[in-house]
Length: 255
Image 1: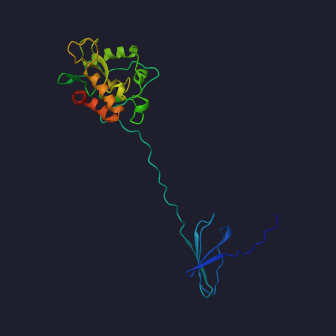
Image 2 (image 1 turned 60 degrees about the vertical axis):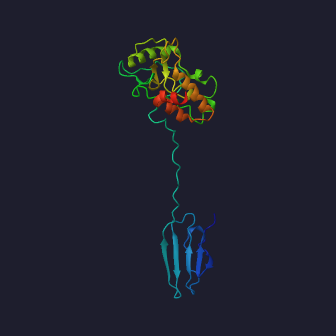
């Protein structure tokens, strides 16, 4: 490169309302503008300039320069993190369907106690509050619970549920026939209940007199609520909460 010759950069200026707005290239401070008129020259910051300079020239030819505060960028608004919608009040969120299920430990023998509402048995809310399948939400019902065969695709095999059922019966102190008692999902798979979370399973005594199978009144309610949810007559959360809180009351209202 050739030898650099120092020269004075001529400022560009715009006169506006008695003010001269001047700026120079390369971030160099501007020379005084028209010393005979005492104009005020404000130099805006450029790339590489750390502050704005205020240059005042008086009619006597005296020039003073002061640094103005650095301009700051407006604060950046950060969107809040996306959160997962919580389960209905008092209901847990289970692990969801598993490729391979394992036998889950049940509450200690005799630690759970049945309730009742008329002829209908109710689970102990401390042992069986209900748990949901996190894959089933209001937004996914059309591709999950409202699809025929969905529940069969996620149901644990009997090799898992049978030993769990025996242990759950011991936890509840159930002494009746296991052939007519259902190992029941409190929030059914049809409403997005978790398939194998102990918080969603209990041995349900049959409320049907002379029952010869596990079918009971709660099974009827489950079908009704699923149809209401899939037809848009009820939200998924409302159906889950109703059946988890007191399925007998829900049966009287909807069944």
